Length: 232
View (cartoon, rainbow, N blue to C red):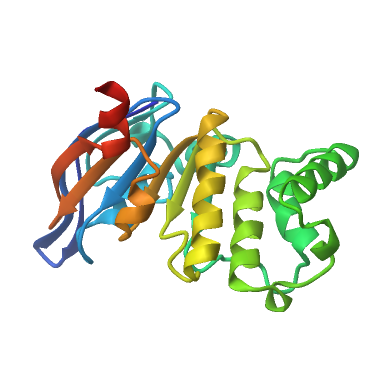
């Protein structure tokens, strides 16, 4: 599903290049649950943004679903992102002026899905996430865990092939975080490829592989103990 070849990302200041990612080579198969870890400043969020087609690599190649995205114009990348990728953020990124229902519905409006189908899809997701009673509330009326549930619901309502999560439990207490991670595990078992950035070893254990970044370099790419146990 994903292949990175000699991918780098730098910011130019005058004649000087400051590298954030350096010469990354990586393959991720459809259906995997992959964790990206590393210290602050290692390049984790930048890598996630490139995978989500929100940033363009300054060097190297990125193939997504066999398409050479590094050659795409912005409009084509935006279309690919809209139809195949869901994003979950640490800070939720809900729209304050919209209700739970309207926040979840937003990606379907961008995809120009007809009203009747939108209503059905939102109703299904609200039911699945047990949020029917909260559909008319605004984000500030929800707990952190409930806001993140809305964020996940919004990310998956368009049935993406790839779900990207940047510190999805960073603002949640442990029980709420566990609920979100169990939900990710369930979504992965249903066939969604998941890539998460986290500092939590506990959250990383939900996945199949852990990719360690350090100063922009890919330091290691190893299976989790769960995967090693399954292959033993």
